[in-house]
Amino acid sequence: MTSARPAGHEEATVQQLAELYDQHEQAVSPVQRFANRVTAGLGRPLALAIIIGLVIAWVVGNYAARLMGSTALEEFPFPDLGFLVTIAALIVALLILTTQRHEEELADKRARLTLQIAVLSEKKIAKLIELMEEQRRDNPLLPSRVDREADAMATASDPRASLEQLEASSRQVS
Image (cartoon, rainbow, N blue to C red; front, top):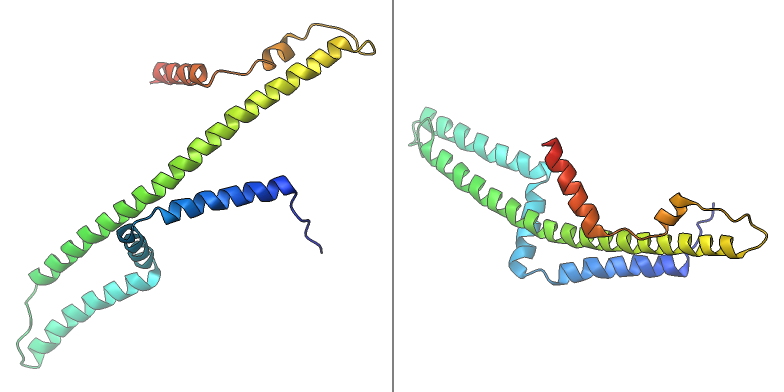
């Protein structure tokens, strides 16, 4: 089984996308990079197991210390444990929000790039249709006829007008 080598323009596109991701990663501050790593680590099942293990060890350790006659760090309902878990939850929530904001920046860049490519592609397709219709009209071997649909498709759409129309139709539905 052989794999086909991508064409030159495909390689260039892949390279440009890789550069987009590299630029996004290079613009990351050290604090953001740390937050991304911590969030990634906390998102693994091992982190969940460790946290649950620590909570169980805290509770069992306090009960075991009391049963052995030692002084327990705290009694049920474990207010210190509750405080630590609350602070940890706040920190994790802030880390998740920070990481999410970072990822949304990249998603926004991708969305703008996709929109730009879509608009450009639509203009190119409209130009191709226009040229094909012109060729059909100029070629004596092809029957000359009026194709209103092709004429409409040969005109590139206006993204602003399309957005306004979409917003107006969504307001009517609401």
